Image (cartoon, rainbow, N blue to C red; front, top):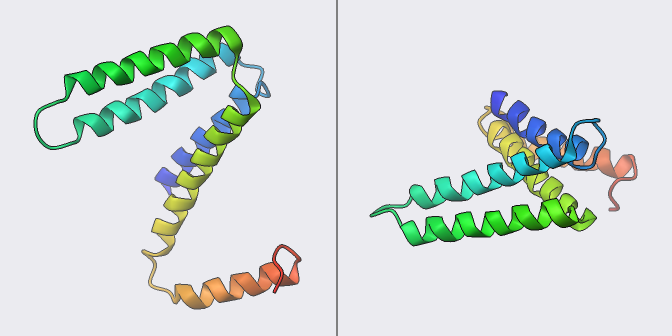
Length: 126
């Protein structure tokens, strides 16, 4: 549940702050978001076996430095914001699925029931 709250919080941050809905400084929120993305890439690069690829780390830093300069000068497109939101939605979905499949329940039955509910409410067609 803590992981789910974390993922929802990250998504909410993008939805609210980057889109300018929270009243907070969009520039600071954007830099934080870019830094978080860069941190994930660095963590992934450092997590590989063998020696640290310093060239890769440099390329990651250069890429994010260029993205930061561009974002601060030009802003962020609606498409970029939606991609960030979609990525966070996928993280939320993955966290929910991981949690759900750890429960000792008949998930296939529950999924079928849920699908029927969505059909009845008009969200899905048969």
